[in-house]
Image (cartoon, rainbow, N blue to C red; front, top):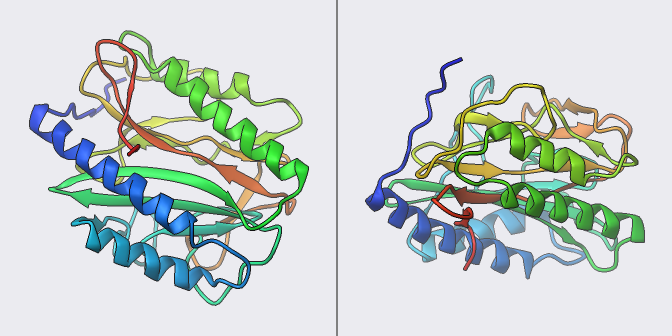
Length: 256
């Protein structure tokens, strides 16, 4: 199978590094605004303002992925509790004990970085704390094996191995290439789908994003055309980094 993977050159990588640092700042600042009583619309407006202040552009605002009926209307995806991904900011008010996913992509000098974190709203349950810890560890395990010479499937296997059986991997959602566009080849499954995928080589840029549920991992697309929610109503966590494949260990792009 042939893959249309676009490797990034030196200049593009430098712009990506700047993009990633800005995005890390945006997520950190937006996370600091998460508290009971805040609306998701407030967080979307805050993130948009922060992106622009730092000299970047919101890559999600107005972006219309394949299969969507209309462009995404926000600057950041805000998914609460059983909302797995792609939640749209609105009137929803956060309450104590909620779990919110902040998933954002920005463009700087034409290069796009993508990252996500799961943030507790006040005190959360021990079960949700464990869910977040497992998802973080799955991302770390994936990045560890994302080395030149390995294959995309090695990343997928590492994620699946890191997730205890009592949790469910959201299998219909996956990581992806990123850089010139929000979504590029290759797809990076969060489980072993039996396909090796392309070989990892220096210059390849990937957004790795394990999405893990306290239930069975089955999700459904809501009527807004973007928000995926867990069928069984269980809470979901997501953590994501944009990484660069190098001659040695992967470089995490989306950190300050």
